[in-house]
Amino acid sequence: MSENTINITLRVWRQPNGHTPGKLVSYPVKDVSTDMSFLEMLDLLNEELTVKGEEPVAFDHDCREGICGMCGVVINGTPHGRGSSPVPTTTCQLHMRMFHDGDVITVEPWRARPFPVIKDLVVNRSAFDKIIQAGGFISVNTGAAPEAHAAPVPKLKADRAFDAATCIGCGACVAACPNHSGMLFTAAKITHLAMLPQGQPERHLRIKKMIGVHDALDFGGCTNIGECAAVCPKAIPLDVISQLNRDLISSLFTRDGK
Image: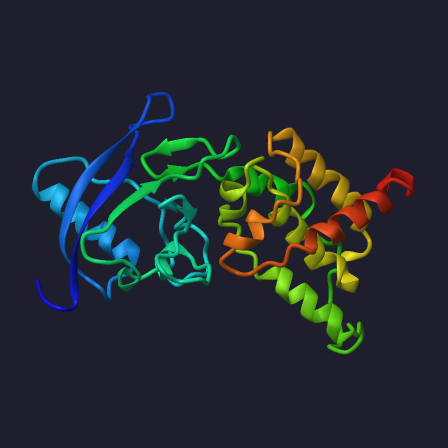
């Protein structure tokens, strides 16, 4: 083993489908380069399993650049994992240099009622899509593009909208919350549009629809524990939930939520 490689033991959740009980299975992985990302290390494990004629570990991935949100797994009890880093990150941007030779690393899927397991580390996160579909839209007139400065946005509101828009919908907030609440995700989408002129026509109707779907899909309520913001790889601030609450209260005093 060179100075730039480590030997680890993975305890990976294996579950053939959503109807069959799963279990943790241990796999030794040797000569792991510390320059590898966590997903590249899983690729290495799957290559070894394939050579042995065993079923590879199923896990979600896409861009591997920290912007798509597909790579969510729970590593040593923390969504996306951190190793020794204090800064939240996506799993694909977590590197093996954050671990040590001889470490035992437990890898599990998101544990949340609205995210049922499909196979191994893959979960169904379509519940987030349904929340977006319920109200994550704006009404615009078709035709020529408006002049860029026709709808000025104060910088503080523009910055806040941009910060909320960085949410990638990975689901780490739900996985970390003991109530399985999706409030941070929902609040980020609501705040993004609430800060912009384009989001005003449906502002109150939007929040009623999105919260209604959130609750109907069995997401839990928010009790302000803050675990969601602590693990968010895009650092969505917890106070977007305050924005959601203010808009929800305001919507109760508007006709038909409009």
